[in-house]
Image (tube, rainbow, N blue to C red; front, side, top):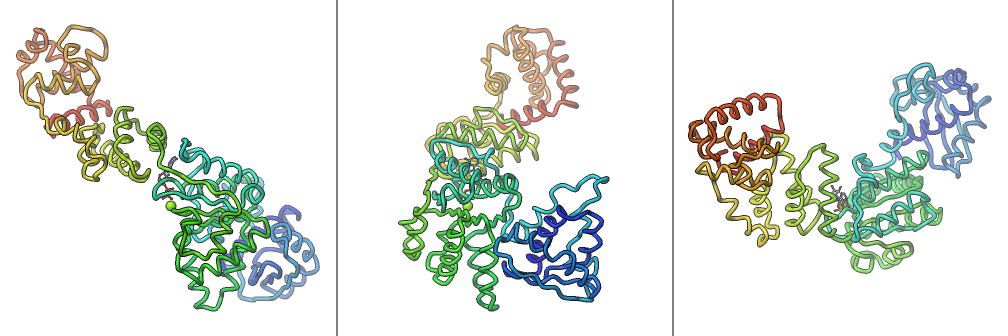
Length: 472
Ligand code: ADP
Ligand code: MG
């Protein structure tokens, strides 16, 4: 543990104290104090003057010990010391006004848990991962259910929980989401999320600086210990030994342990067998590549998160042509989103097909689109075909006289594009679209031009059509 950990712990303890002491007294006696040493059993509090130290000692030793004890059950001894250099803005000093805010002023949202998390873990839990936005299908159902069970009763359901599966299938998402969910349900619990790689780096640093014991303490304070990509510890003997001790300590204290790996425990050949066997003590759940329907549902949910609407047909096309990982699926989706947001184009299959092909996804499927991809619009009949296909109409719907809104709309777009990008005369256009009079084409042109000034979606559709026609 380092100074920032002490500060975070002290903030947490002060929060407990503030619940037991009137606000004015709390602020008077605990301002400019710091926790300068702590090992889970013994803590040393520094104050700025002898006077305040004596006051604190006489009046608050018991309450402070109790507050510590409510978070760290092993806590036994409290010592006090004076550090004349402590002042309000000292990095070590906790802000009592923040901890016991003036009730007449609006509260700042969740300042404390955020900071606790920052100090105790080596990598942040990211808000974007939740159990709700994890789409469940037959191939990840078990792992998801186990995470739900654990988040309701950490430490007492499945321990450890061991989740395994290939790259990009949602392990990190599930681990982070479970951490977030526990944090939401049990704000007091200390949740430590780390990757095995990070953990190893910490172990190396601790060994180099002779602080292995402090590192152990840090991890043993966790109520929930989440370690991602454990396969990374293969052949890292010393880190494995450290991890073994931490695992045992947490396990015996009934603290929840969650592990992810790219393989099941028995295939982790380069890991000590005593570790591998421990991984099998609790619950093991594998994650596989989701089926087509789940992939489409994932894409839909990501679109929703991003606030963009893409056609079902396009999402199905992406889902159908990605067969490795959800990360790839997202990569293609992000390209579609970039087209939509940066280039103001509604992404079409024709635009995405070459990108998917470049990534060498199921190329046979994409080959079917090759003809389509190379096709360009040259004549007015081609324009009709492209627009009809885009709006899922038949060419006759456009050349005919139907007054149905969608058909009229598509017809106007054909007229507009034929004039603007292909330089046909109004006369020619009107004549070719079922023998209409030329003012109809002129009217369609003007109306579309005007509409384009305020309708972003129309602009995206026309850009998409221009792209597909080979004009852009
Ligand atoms: P892993 O850790 O297994 O390599 P990740 O958890 O990093 O995979 O997942 C890769 C991406 O796919 C992430 O953006 C994640 O949110 C997303 N993802 C994976 N599975 C799902 C799912 N079932 N629902 C929603 N998103 C998912
Ligand atoms: Mg991962």
